[in-house]
Image (cartoon, rainbow, N blue to C red; front, side, top):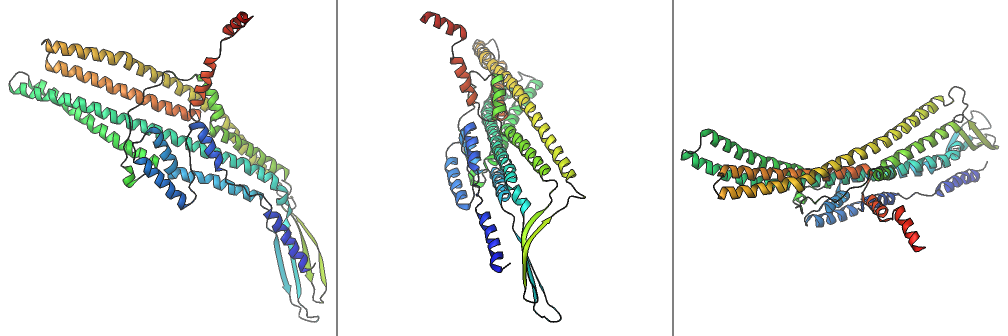
Amino acid sequence: MTTSKIRLFFLSASFLSARLPAEDLPFGRVEQAVRERTHETVRWEKDQAARQQTLELVRRRLRRPLTINSAVQIALLSNQSLQATFEEVGLSAADLREAGALPNPRFNLSARFPDQPPSGTDIEYSGAIDFLNILMIPLKRRVAKEQLEAAVLRVADETLKLIAQVKIAFCQLQASKELLTRFKLAAETDGAALDLAQGQHQAGNISDLALAQQQIASSRSRLAIAMAEADIRRNRERLDTLMGVWGPETNWQIAGDLPPIPSADLSQEGLERLAVTQRLDLQAAYLQVTALAEALGLTKDFRFLGALEFGVDSEKQSDSQTISGPTFAIELPIFNQGQARIARSESVLRQAQKKFEALVVDVRSQVRELLDELESKREMVRLYKEELLPSEARILSQSVLNYNAMVIGNFELFTTRNEETRTEREYIDAIKEYWITRAELERAVGGSLYRQAQADRKVMAQPSPSRSSAAGGKDK
């Protein structure tokens, strides 16, 4: 075989490898999945220029008071742990390209020098390529594509998890700020009561015990303020971490109080169905099972072929005669026929199947549990809003009238005011717990509840069978 033929062999292999399609990084599918479920935008920073652009955008948003939506958007742009998770898409895309690449050919060269005439150097050179790997390329690419799709879904699911965490931290911060306001009002009331008690004690009108009790009440009010301020600092720090901001960027302000709860929640049946069809980790687990099944089939199909090489060999002997011809090498499956690989692949597949089935059951259970908890929190908020708070307001109003009529004293009025403040604090806590539970439910469902709300409204808008039949009879 001539040198030109060897060169043509390697050039052909290089050309075939270059013709393999290069896969673009499929991050657009992550963006689409997140946008469909949350109406939010994510961005993958691949270079320093993109990072600087993101920082400028984040700084502009931090100059304005934060809403829950702007906090979520900042976290999606600036959280570096999330950016690190995005790299899983790049790694899986690289694995897909590797699965579709032709194996590199192997080139061997040897030179032997005779110790007696004819004294020409014996030169032998050969080239070979693993043909088995070429045969397996379509199957390996199919497995790698499914693994890439699973990675895309896992990354999108981690994004949804971050969104839920930001919403929970934001609600906790809002509640802490509202509670601090209530604690300060209670502290003012207790401070006024303590001043009055000290004056009465000096005049000899109340006992040491009554003064000590009022001092304890005032101290507890100041302690509540200190605890609320600590909660605010802790919740701000938590939100800073989730948003990925530090230094001067942490001097942001929050906008608004906890929003009122909606008038109605969604049906359990609809939410379970939505969770099963929308949860990205479920889809990722299903694709993982599919990929493992494909890999098992690949292992079984090629269990008896460990290596299969074709090539050419050329030898220029010492008498200047050149001998060329094809080469063939195969690995004989005498001692190892792939039994261990097959058994391991089967166990891994069964494990993935069981995990997927368990996850489906767990997701349905999470939705039912959180929906029941959400309904309980809604009822608690309703009781506070419609019964307890109005009753406390009436009691305080009547107490003021009795105080003006000198029926009750100062301490009774202060106690009544503190009771109303305590009920208001509990009401704020109930609203906070409702929104936290709702964020957890969105996470359990796999995204925004907006889809299901639209579906429920369509069902409610449809006429009932009795109405339809009646309308039809009337038209006739």
